[in-house]
Each structure stands twice: as structure tokens, then as C-alpha cells.
Amino acid sequence: MKSFFIRAAVGLSLLASLVVVSAQTNSHNFVRWENEISTYERSDATNPPPKGCFVFIGSSTIARWKTIAEDFPGVPVVNRGFGGSEIMDATHFAARVVVPYAPKKVFLRAGGNDLAAGKSAEEVFTNFTAFAETVHAALPSAEIIYISQSPSLARWKQHEAEKTLNTLAAAYVQEKPWMKYIETYDIVFGADGMPRAELFVADKLHFNAEGYKLLAERVRPLLEQ
Image (cartoon, rainbow, N blue to C red):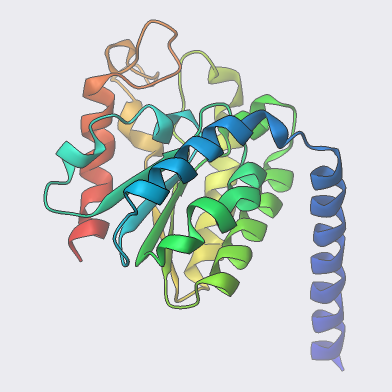
């Protein structure tokens, strides 16, 4: 009897999460990314990524990672980030810029913009699970890897929410054999317990070359497996 109530509670929680995601999706403006997604599609038409590649998708941390091919030489990496996006944008456009490539692995780095827009860590986590389940349903043999959030000076006020999101995501991934989690929360900190300014460009939000070197070090083991 006890297990019945537990399963019922989990089912109701999942249903409530789906309702939240549906409501957010209905009010979200996906059109703002149409030009960038269409540009990717035009590129794919003339220079399609190889099947079994490693796709990176997400917000500006991915979109601005211009050295990604150099950081992982000999690895078929495909960058499909679009700056300013939220996790639900990655979910929405996955059918166009992830699924067609039949990738071996899909790396997601997003969530910071979601928190900055006023969503709670729990709401963002719900969007994360929707991404994971959507991509897994379309690509059951692909491994999905979440690159966690790391604080910045510009958004230091949300670092606790980022830590909570990371904790929720890590626990979720642990239960999914087709997922992995990459911890990056700690890579930015200096001896004073604050993000190091020398890792960011002038806006104090986005990584510079030194910041991307640290990020690449954390990601590399998942590409070499």
C-alpha cells in the first residue's frame, strides 16, 4: 500500500511538471531564434555533420565557444548553441538541429538565462528533464550530457540557485544510464571564494579564452571515452 501511494505521488508530481512546462511553452517566444536555426539548417544542407557526431547545444557559453573544434582535435564536434536561449529553446529546436545528425552524444549547457528571467531552480530543472526526455525519445541510443552551471560576477546573485539546479540535475542524471553530468561549478573560483575576473570578458558574464580552457578540461574526458 505504501508503495502505491509513493508511485501515485510521483505520478502526480510528474503530471504537475508537465503542466508547468506546457504553460511555459505556450507563452514562450521561439520565433526570436528562427534566423539562427535557419542558418544552421542552410549550413547542414551543403555541409551536413557526420552521423555519430558530438553535438553541443545551449545558450551563450556554447554559442561563443569558437575554439571548440581546436579544443577537441580529431573529434567530430558540432556547435549548435544560440546565445540568450533557455533550456526550452534547446528542447524546441532539437528536432531541427540535434536529432537529424543522429549524434553519439548530446551536450547541453543552459539554464543561467532561465534563472535570470525569474524562474526558480525547480522550474528550470523541470525544463531540463523535459529536454532530456524529449531528446532520449528521439535518440534512444545517444548519451545526453549536462554541463552544469558555473557562477559569474555579473550574475553572482543567482549562484545559490545555480548550485541548487546543479544538485537537482546531478541527482536526476544519476538515475539515468543514458545520461552523464559534468561538474563545472567550482572551476571559476579564486582564493577569495568569488569568480575570478580573469576568466571572463569585459561583461563579467561570458568566458574568455582562459575560461574556455578550464571548461574544455572538464568536458574532454567525456569526449575521449
